[in-house]
Length: 397
Image (cartoon, rainbow, N blue to C red):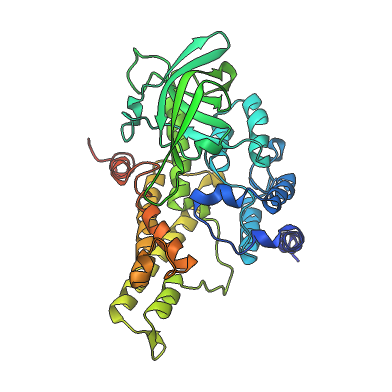
């Protein structure tokens, strides 16, 4: 038996013994993640996973990570998928600021912040966009002035996902108003649980409020929580966006290869069979069959491409500007997927409330409405196409 096979057996046995039944076979939209994780079973699941470092399986052990190789992390992902286990933790700490600190943080910052991300003690939100600085992020105006050992911050951020549940924020702030807009920006970390921070959730058409407005009135960030150099935060900020876009676009899941002989069920075909029906073992509508086939082939090609890129990336690092390709294609796929599911259900796929719709149908409507934002947050499709044209294809301005 190879070392990897032995690791698989050990992992399978441990997951079976430690993953609560309530944390298996569950699906939820990211907007509702705070509800899923606010249970005793979820807290116990996080506790035992964090003790092994498996909430961040490939992070170094010295920062409370699992220290697993890429192959071992792939086995862990497969075994969790086998029992349909919900990830013990999620969010911007693991997906965005954690990887950024591993590249740009000081040793003190890594030791102070990363273990708290692994354990779930620290939950993070992002302070990037502002009312006048969205697609043109470098136009941000939130100011930070050095005062002794602190930055004093005044201004406003918007679309701060999960700010009402976060206790830390990573933010881009303007520290030199006289410099060119890209050169006068710094990247800081700040405590959200302080008097100078005010949070106002924003209601969406999907019925939830995952995004917020965040106001700073003499809020403080410690000088020791400056990441990278003063006035050089744009470089750090861009790298974090690459981690964000790889997650939104699906690149972060590219290491989850299917095991030999595994056949993934086609959810679209199942929905069509239920709502449209079959004739001679085939979906009754030829046009619907063609639409499902086209979408499924595109989806599978995207998954295989993501796997290839992850395998080719040195040391498992997230690629640079190419993440914009995955963000663009992945976002369109997510939006089209939600739209196709709703379409296949016919009028049952556009219900908002009432006895005539079951939970699956109501969730489909909510996901369809939520999916309209996927091509906007994390950088709009238009922004991604500009990055691809300039940074990937090398086209002139």
